[in-house]
Length: 262
Figure 1 (tube, rainbow, N blue to C red):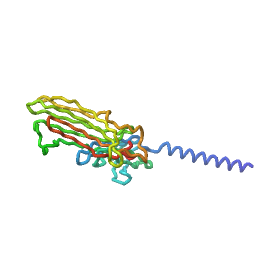
Figure 2 (figure 1 turned 30 degrees about the horizontal axis):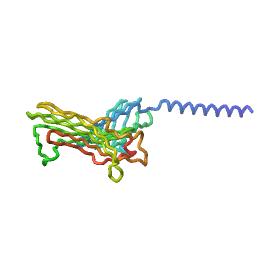
Figure 3 (figure 1 turned 135 degrees about the horizontal axis):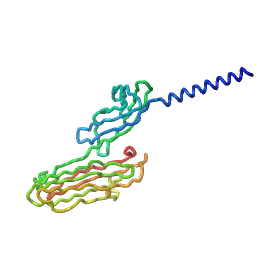
Figure 4 (figure 1 turned 180 degrees about the horizontal axis):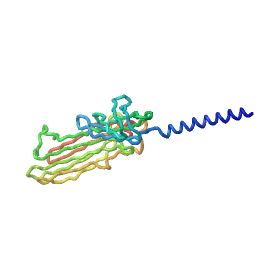
């Protein structure tokens, strides 16, 4: 009877010791404490992307994976904070999405990983005059139209853009603009939903500028995440008129699905 009690007590002590050992290992495991990605817009040749990462133990090296594929390894040492250049990435008007995973190897502990995503937008931009074979009727009036992005923010499909003109002529030039968002069906026919907002309209004197931007009045309301069986088809168009000259940008019909969820 005494031997049985002794064995039971010994087994319990061993189990308790193992549990304590496991707890200590888990509590002392190194971890990634923060990860932030920095990217700009793609204006035609991609944009550089960098990431800052901090840990609670010195880093040995980091294996970087982009969209599930190994990309490269950055080597460190005696530091818990790094800033790493990931490369150059192209975008699109809806924001091309990239997944990043950092597998961190520590100098004294087992590996830990952290993941994040980023999107790269490729604005649509023009200074060209539409009509009259592209020859400005007011060559001393400079202007541009830009659509920065056409994206889903989790609640609304948004068009973000602006126009600008500068009157370098000696004349007063009438300027106006409009921002239009239109829904289509899967076959490319308008559904009847359309929202248009107008910028200021009036004369712009010599040496003065004209500016206007899109606003939330053109947002297309979805009301939540886009589901796996849902699709929305929308076109964004921005138009600038300076006297007899017109400049505009147009996205064509963009298809929004669950891949566009934030």
